[in-house]
Length: 354
Image (tube, rainbow, N blue to C red; front, side):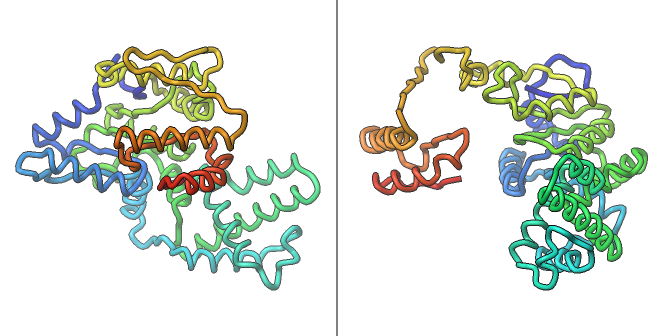
């Protein structure tokens, strides 16, 4: 599906990109993707499709790099700390805050503990969870769990102060800053950094944090709602998509709506049928014209992986399919990883487990 605040019924994102390339108007288009690797790949693809393989001014960002561009435009003296320096600062917090749960570590904090707490607080920042909210949640707990949550809230709060004292930031701090400034200043900075951008396409994301949704909401306003988010979601199959319900509902609450992806309509129906029926217990079978699916049952995870390994071996040997062209997808890989390693190695199947 496509999410947008623009009052239209359908759109083809690929067509928008193609038209910008052919009309030499890429300076009017901002593409936002999830990773720097995707940024590099997309830039290469666009350059290869451009006349004379010259794309001119090209804007492809992640939400993180976009936010950093706006942030450093407004705060040229600000700095992002390295992992090693941020770990040192986190260690100082343990020594400067009165703690209960972590009190035994007061004089000699294990490096692993510092790293874990640092990473947890980093995720809290990215998701917009404040020390105050953490303390509120801690009140619902008891015993050592309450003490641990309260300690992390205190360390988190002190860490924010230490960062502010030296004008240092991480990704979560940048998001927090971007969402705290007035829209007029955000718009002015956007125009100064991104010139004549009038269309934004966001693609390739699995999920968004609340601060990221807030940034996307502001971005939509900057281009008169000419922002289109390709979001792989289908609300009538909770077995496959329920983990995205909150994310989807937050977009809807911000005024976004779903419109038809014309590019998807032109494809065969396999993607839609998978969205509707995969893992959906209300559907007894999946039938795709000319593309049959075989359902195989196993009595245990070990047998399931063995059956998969045999099928892969058959495909490699009889159909001469190269191993790197075969993908096995699991709902929860952690439940299977140990078995996969043992069985695939036994069957001589090379694999990349991610």
